[in-house]
Image (tube, rainbow, N blue to C red; front, side, top):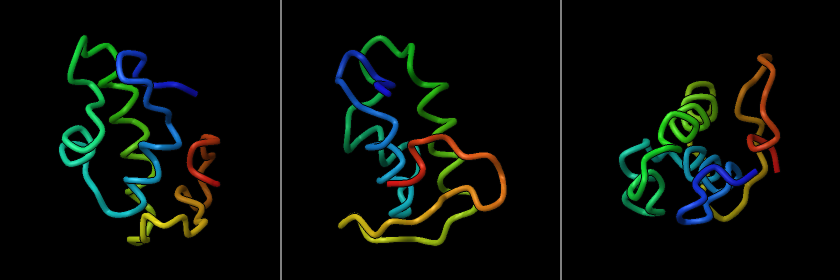
Amino acid sequence: MIVCICHRISDREIARHARAGMGFDDIQMELGVATQCGCCENAARDVVAQCSAAQPVAALRGIPVRCCGTQPSPASCTE
């Protein structure tokens, strides 16, 4: 699902960076999410929180990892 329509950033892309240990500010700087109109900031922060809270740091190279453990997880948290 596209989270940031201004920069066409998906929840999967945000989740991938969050699983790599990046926080929202780092992801915002790297991807440009929530830097134009700002309407996506809450949704982007939610994806980061869901994917980084219960997950160990993984490399950006695509190590498949579930990010939410036993909690219901959005499709963006698994690849």
